[in-house]
Amino acid sequence: MITEEDRFVVDFNFKDFLLALWGSAPRPRKPCKGLVFFSKKKKCIDKILTVILIISIILAISMTVYVIITPKEGEKFTEFYVLGPNGTADDYPTDLKVGEEGTVIIGIVNHEYANVK
Image 1 (cartoon, helix red, strand yellow):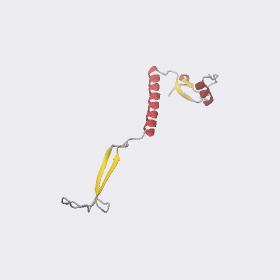
Image 2 (image 1 turned 60 degrees about the horizontal axis):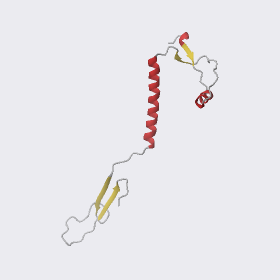
Image 3 (image 1 turned 30 degrees about the vertical axis):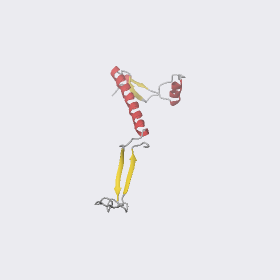
Image 4 (image 1 turned 90 degrees about the horizontal axis):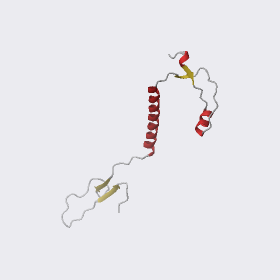
């Protein structure tokens, strides 16, 4: 537990926060009792760890946004297939002699993610 003399109050006002980001410094305000966040005796290592944590959170959020926005490209291949005369993978001629006619359906599908000439 943090003792009463080691505590300080952080008074957060969203308007002042936006003004500080925009370049206008807010006027100091009287502390609001009851909102105790940090100890005055914050060590150097705590400050370093806080900065590392904030950088890690920003990095994790940006990587998540990148993964969501960037589509995943699948495997690149060309598909070849032979079907029988009725459009199924059976009943196609398997024992043809030279000069003998047979009917098959030959399919080629491009999964290369690019036009091929």
